[in-house]
Structure formats: structure tokens, C-alpha cells
Length: 220
Ligand SMILES: O=C(O)/C=C/C(=O)CC(=O)C(=O)O
Ligand SMILES: [Mg+2]
Image 1 (cartoon, rainbow, N blue to C red):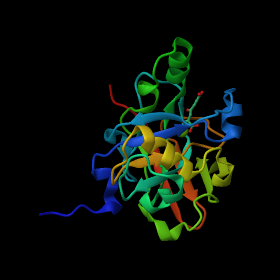
Image 2: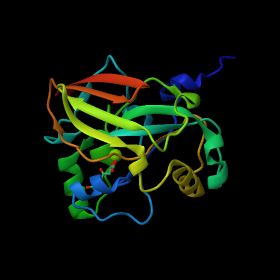
Image 3: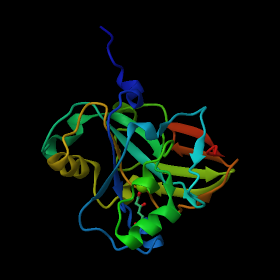
């Protein structure tokens, strides 16, 4: 029998649950109201892309945005997890990008339609190496940054989150059972902007991890 290794959680085929508008400065830059409860959406496991492969601009988008986010990797599943026990369910973290076809999202928003094609396309979830829990003792105070072609675009701190990681784990698990290997994307700080074919994206968590991805256009 082969045992699965959580350090390669992206190979497990588990769900990716994303939280939107969890930073007030980002909600404001897109002219959205500050949420009073978490806004959730999903990406499929086919959204994962690892360093060495490119982020592909979908053929149907001409405004692909980067969103740098802290990802929380679930180590122990559960339903209706109390906030007080939430961190016991965390195996570790990953630096993630929530790549977003903003033009498609804007159309979906105006028509009241789901964001699936804006958020869940192939390569929409670039992910760093697994970061063991011990390497980030305080996930509520972690600095995240992202550069496009060496220019700093996003520079935020998880202390700015509206809903904390324990709150999010508890809230999500009330409605969606969490399983080992699931990933929660916790939202992006301000500074999102468009990327183009041939751009190089670099992102990092201060003193913990960096990652680099190239952007390419999807082939016809
Ligand atoms: O409502 C919008 O215009 C955009 C929302 C998002 O894309 C939400 C996120 O994914 C996020 O805040 O990280
Ligand atoms: Mg996002």
C-alpha cells in the first residue's frame, strides 16, 4: 500500500476552498462592500500549477489578475469544527495565487452568475512548496508580497484579514466537511493587477518561501 504524503497535497485531488473580500483594502480597491460573513467559492484540483509550469491566460480573457494569498492546508478533517479547536486541523501552509479572469468575473457579477470560469480554470491556483505548520507560528501575522517583472505590486499582512483563520475553518466546516489535503485560500490584500503573456510573477512569504511563475497564453 502506498502512503500519501501531505507535502504533496496538490496531488491528492482534494478541494480548494477560496475566501473572497477578506481584506478591507482589497474589497475597497474593487469597490465592493466589506463583507459581514465570509464569501466562499471553489476551485477544482485541476487548477493547481507548480513552479516549472506556466500560468496560462485563458483564451476567453484579456484581463487576468494576480491575487497573492496564504493557503491553509488541512491535516485533519472535520465537520462543524469549533474555533477553539480549528488550528489542530491545520497541517501547514502554502503560498498561493488566486488567478482571476477579472473581465469574466465582472460580467458574471453584472449578470448575477457564478464566478466559475473567472476563478476555476486550469492553472488558476499556482502553489508553493508545502510549509510545515511549525514554520509559521503565527499565521495571523505573516507578510505576503508579489512582484510582476521585478516590480512590487502586492505587499500585505495576514493581520489585515477580516475573518481569522480559526474563524474561517470553523465557518467553512459548518457547511462543507473539511478533509485531509484540502486547501483554504484566505483572500488577497490590495494591489491586484493585470498580467500579460511572458510576464514573470514572483511571490513570497517573508523569510519562509518564494516562488516564481511565468505567464503564457493558452494554445488555441
Ligand atoms: O468581488 C469582486 O469584485 C472580486 C472579488 C474577488 O476576486 C475576491 C477574492 O478572490 C479575494 O478577495 O481574494
Ligand atoms: Mg482571491
